[in-house]
Image: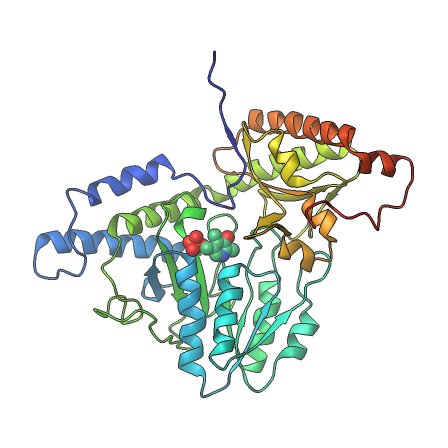
Length: 407
Ligand SMILES: *Cc1c(COP(=O)(O)O)cnc(C)c1O
């Protein structure tokens, strides 16, 4: 029997390492294994040279200076360092932080922790298309606001926030702007300087680099931003992040950044065509299909779709032997919870539970998309054929009071 290729459409969860990245990393496990902080022998120098070069590559990707890049273990750590570090550094000025309900858990949970440490946090609602309301943002700013944290692009919907406008509002009121750029960096042009962003967190494994390495951009000039270290030790990374550097990981991150700079436009054009083909096909083949989130201000490779009256987790079971993607349900300890991001967009629990996130990537082919269209459509039809709820819907019965079985 011919081995079936697995189709991977979960690139917002993580991306495979590009083989060119792996190739760049390999010498740093063996030949150049030195500690980048060993200043007095060639092993240390070679490692440091690798890190320095990667720092340039990573900085260039986001329009930063290499001195403004602090390497971390990933975006989660970079976000923790940015939010906790800025809160500690600036809390004499004020204790108010503004973020949005659709942020990644790394931001939301860090803010929750800061609330136990004396921070006041405003969690902005979003509009039904996922964009924040700029007037609401401005109205939320007080004299005590030290930091606004808004992600560039959302991981579940791909929706891109109006960063330039957000930045203008922050500048007008003297608040620092932090952005989780994890999903945007390497996929769409990101220029933190032009955008007036002061802190930005991102990670290698969402852009074809290795897992376990990320970075925090910290603006150095106008204004000179400082964050209090959250990791104490040898004073690496200009005192902001101690710990022996993950040299192979950092070198891989650098290579991934360089490749992304060079190839992002081509990838984006190709993937947005495939994404649109997928979306259009579902609209033609199936009834009652909704795309979630703003479709104009959106990442080129992502679409989040609700297949009404079909439960997403069950739908995935019909094809998860061949296609990997994510549903709009999150497994918590006891039950399936609807995605809080989709709920914040105003989707009811049923629509949130009926959604799937398709996130394409550099290695997605047209053949993958054709097979996905066929398998997902067949799955939806199969589920609906078996579903009394679908039958009731077809008979015109009001379903607004019907409860899904998980509840
Ligand atoms: C993946 C992700 C993170 C966390 O990144 P890690 O490097 O895995 O810690 C943070 N924010 C967003 C938007 C993400 O998609």
